[in-house]
Image (cartoon, rainbow, N blue to C red; front, side, top):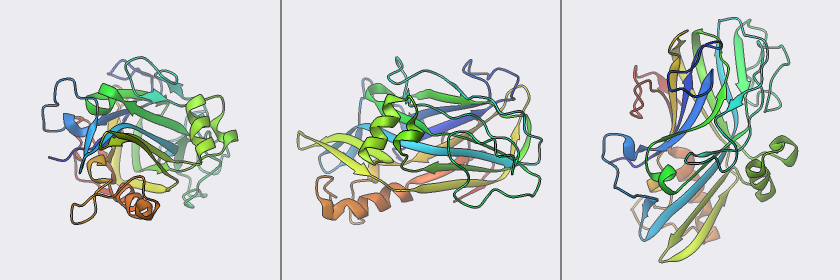
Length: 282
């Protein structure tokens, strides 16, 4: 059974409430995929990383979320959050930038422009937001879906969705203590856990760009849900199943490669971690 870590984004119309009762627009949530096709263990608070490794906390910086398509962009608006650092009972939200305007408008919150050259004068709407922190531990790491942040997105049909995991600096962290800690660490991903009973922290500064191409319809009443899925169970395993020691600097590049390879983006209205219409991701 795939044991994954999921970040899910529910896109609702800009002026209507999400069916989940969270914020308008894009509701970014986080969960492990123990909720995907399997009954999670009662009281579970960690992910089994194999070879005596237990993953107890995962933090990652989503520097940028972007959705692109033909609809006219709404005026720039600040993204709303489902809570603040250490929000009770849910994965922590480290801070979020405002929503961007149409391509070439200059009204982009969070990130300082497109790193992948997706901006241009093609007349399409490009809405960007970020950075924000995904911070899961305890039962939030092991069980369920937990709101993280919200972004306003106009209803309509979009063609492409992107997430970027990337290191940020102190100025981009804003007033978020969680993002400031990640910036000070120079990390895009921090993993806390134990191996053989001894605590470890693995730090990574990787950049991961993921996109999903294909029709994404943001319904005026119900929105649409997309999922950023990371399979954390294999991060500390070599190809032959042997242990990659998170405390061994020689293993860091292989662990980084495992993290990068575990990421995918899917259209996921039914919250099962699988693509509802088999759109392409990469």
